[in-house]
Length: 435
Ligand SMILES: [Ca+2]
Ligand SMILES: [Ca+2]
Image 1 (spheres, rainbow, N blue to C red):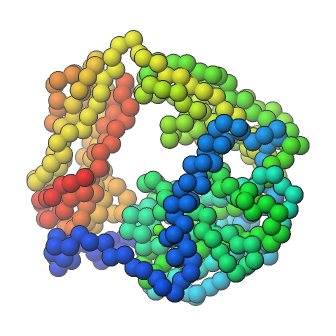
Image 2: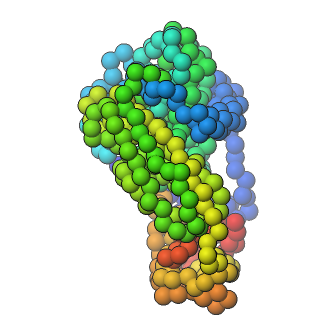
């Protein structure tokens, strides 16, 4: 259902020659400005402070950890009924499309909360019960969310604003999906792991509420889901502890065997590794991983109870030192992405030993090619020697409108690489390819 809505949006825009001509002459994004909606304005002025907030917090957890104990949930809403949770409230402005409980693909069974896109403006609120923040030393918010990057961020047709209030009337935006790097459509993301939202400045407030606002200026956005809303506090009596092993030292491109341990709390555990280079791995106690860039990385292991009350969470850190490899590692480049008949590009090994077992793919999004990247061609070859570039190309394909091209390549001994370009599709031609 949610996919159908988005496909319709794309099809409306694709195939209509007039619209393409308009796109050709005008690349301007029209930025709508609301004068009446306080929250929306709040959101715009708060975006930069949200980012700063996040990065300063990451720094503090890397250096200090969570103190003596660990974290414990004081609010855990997994949406276990098909109705709005007791003591939560809704503020409905578009009765045709507002927050409701859904059962397809929840983050945790059986339900999650979703707001569908509407035909008109939406300002839809789902608000927690009042929570007393008195007496805690640290307080964090975590929740799971899913939406579609193309519509929610790239086109910015809608927003998920997570807001906080200490009096039930004035709201401050503390999180917004627009700050996220590109994410997979309708996959769940969890703000727990390395991305807690620090609410410590609200300690000792007695009437704190968290509001999940779905906001769309004129409708036509995309679905947004939330699940597993948690408020966590520092608790020195936490008995769950974990150990991330290390410290670790390895050469670039060398396999590292990470070692995780946990004790206390209730088994089984959920394991989550954050490798400190933007990559993460879930549900593996002892993962293997490679780094390709020299430097020091701060690795975070987070362990939480998988079942029972899921009350406890523990975190530990380790340092990884990546040193010069014995041989010069190869460097893979995707170069000279061009048209106009289909798409062509050059794979090049600009330095070092042969790249072995090279695999590549080309993907297209837009112009009727779905709102998810569709693979149009892929291929592989045994080796890519330095200074012997290889051409890759797609066949002809037909479409109309703006497209996004994504070319991906990887080999056994290099880091996977992707390059994206924007272009215009005009029948069989691919034109105006640009960054
Ligand atoms: Ca759930
Ligand atoms: Ca948005």
